Image 1: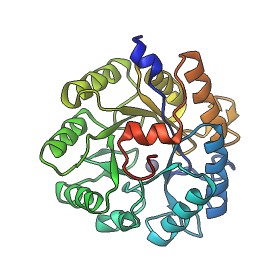
Image 2 (image 1 turned 30 degrees about the vertical axis):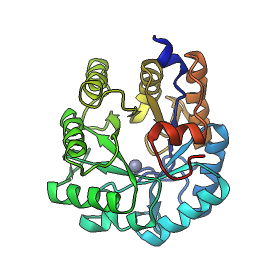
Image 3 (image 1 turned 180 degrees about the vertical axis):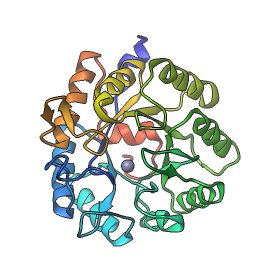
Image 4 (image 1 turned 120 degrees about the vertical axis):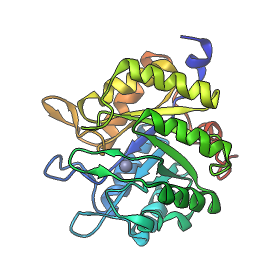
Length: 283
Ligand SMILES: [Zn+2]
């Protein structure tokens, strides 16, 4: 491990809710606004600096309702000063332009998928014209995209969008591994993803998410390789095979322990904003 890897503060993103997990899967999944704000606050105190957010309707189903996103954004900004708010434009909670209806709220960041792939029971459909529109909305409202790379081709697409100006600043790429029917958690692919980011985007920061039981495995790979991490109940509801995670904060604490083991400092909100090149909220 190089000194640079050791010294680079690690940004911990907590994906608090997602579109899929329910209270039946784990009662700790925050669904209502107050639950989401409280769970995010606990995770923030545990060391998370990015909150990756989805919202649910009153029945607990995923929605892209901008009002609900606005309320959650405001709650996090009030209770977790400096925390980076990242709103999801993912395809499980809406279709077409509805997926970007929250972007005029101008959150710090939003997720951006730049290609299609399969999900467990359906196609995750991201047609080029929708991708272009979402990217243009993010540029218009000064929202930094986080590129959700479900496939190697998505890293290449992000690099092209950066070169042609559709993405204004160097992309922040997240490798998503472990979604059934998409890219599995695979060490050699992970290494090649890192290599590809370096080749196409130089020293751009990157992160990785492992879906399901391998969340902790991917966390460890990222921390050891100098990347940033994502954890949270959206991706995984268990601490281990036999134990449900009691909270988002418990999953964040697990990532913090790994950072300690690899001597990676945990990024403060100011450090995270600087690493990501966010213009808002940087002292
Ligand atoms: Zn998500």
